[in-house]
Length: 108
Length: 121
Image (cartoon, rainbow over all chains, first blue to last red; front, side, top):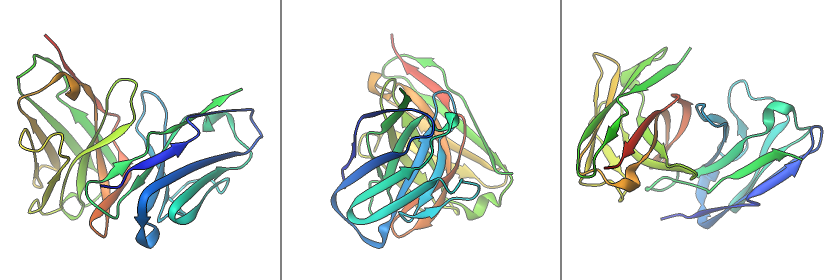
């Protein structure tokens, strides 16, 4: 089973700043089969990034994903008010599928 | 536009059973793997189960294996999760999600808003 560890648990930032979120895997994720989601309370989660760095349809270019192997990063440049949410990474190379514990990006 | 809408969430006693449904529209349902993902109160997302487009292949998290059963009716664009022997730790919002196949797993392109299951006496 692949365990995903996200850090930090919470990021306190202001609109216009940049956010860097980390996702570390307990074993190598080949083919970069890692996705990122945004989730706001009471809403459906939204796919942001798949294959570690490919933006999903309709996702603004201020969201970018990078990394390989065991270390992956989601960067949000120029935070907009609607970007404050919880972000999860998910691996899909192996069953059981697994999510990280999440990073909350909150308004400072 | 892809739409997924879950229903069936309720309050149920420990040891009880409950069935959840997810009705889909806006895509070729029979061509897509679909999953259930849950979120317990104050916790993160947890994958529960996935079924292939044809329904021939099903996968479960260890935490629900033997208690939950996933199925689909492609003629009605409907996904079902039958939950038996429910425990307090099954309390969560249950989301259905449209999957995109890659290797052994799926990532999830579209999600429903979720339905709340509460297991309590």
